[in-house]
Image (cartoon, rainbow, N blue to C red):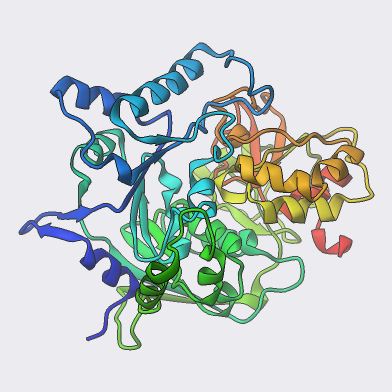
Length: 459
């Protein structure tokens, strides 16, 4: 019997299978940031041990960093302490750190791929749920807790039960104005925020294979939002071209050797999945969420559904929307483009192309936050910062920003934000804030019109 892509990668990294228990899995790359690592390093120090393989770990601050005036000391005491601790801990253990103002600094799930650190066939972990992003390269990547961060630092291995396998196939081409973010929001709305629980999802079909690597990363990033352990897409020519000549990609003969292996990373024709789901791309229009979890989403021209469930009603009450009513023309206060979901150069280009020659609405505050210093630099090379400035928008500096409001970028209580991030939980972007998830294109037209608008009217 053939193997799934997931099985091929997972099985190749099993050090030991514990009878009636988890697998001991070897980890190729461990990504570290300032929030989930201090206690893990403290655990090592208390035991008097060093990081087992520091060369397999890369660190960068992202969650707590400000997105303005990064050359100045961080104002918030806790944030400053966590960033300082990351600097101290990585220095003590010989770990590569891309600190603030380093040309490679940025959101951890943005810098891994753009530097060529993320490669097909790897196992990758990080103390962050959206580690699933790296699965876009055909790697097995998933988030871990602080105690597990310590485990990987100490042993380069982790104990994990093997998830079940699900394949989601979307046939056909995406329509005009419909992108990767709409694709994954549609899937989550169809299977719910818990529909992938217990599974690792492989995405297949023309809708995915025609996406750029940045689009694939957006899809895999949000696998966690339907409860899955992670998601992955088989590497192909698009993957290989993206990785070619990246800073830490293999070179010369090593590239040829790796490429030969990467080309074996696909699900065999006779591979069996525990669950299969199929959708048609023609049924997908630009998406937007209306509730307080990513599964509460719909096509932008649709009306908000009705349910008798008390939790559902509570979500609508919090969001100040009503069942049966359209979401179009809902006034917007904030627009946020950024995060590990949509903070890459392709996302900034999409937003800027839509807003070029126009002005943002006076009632809207817009935050455009590049996912890394490299994205920021490229945006300036292409003059995107100037186009934004002409529209009345400032290009900020890299960081997680308003994705989770662990920094200065907080949406005020009661205000509504259209965000390109991954979660719309109550208060996610600031206490009392309301969030609607959408694509960079939908965010752009909201910034222009000051309300929820079907982006296709601008195309």
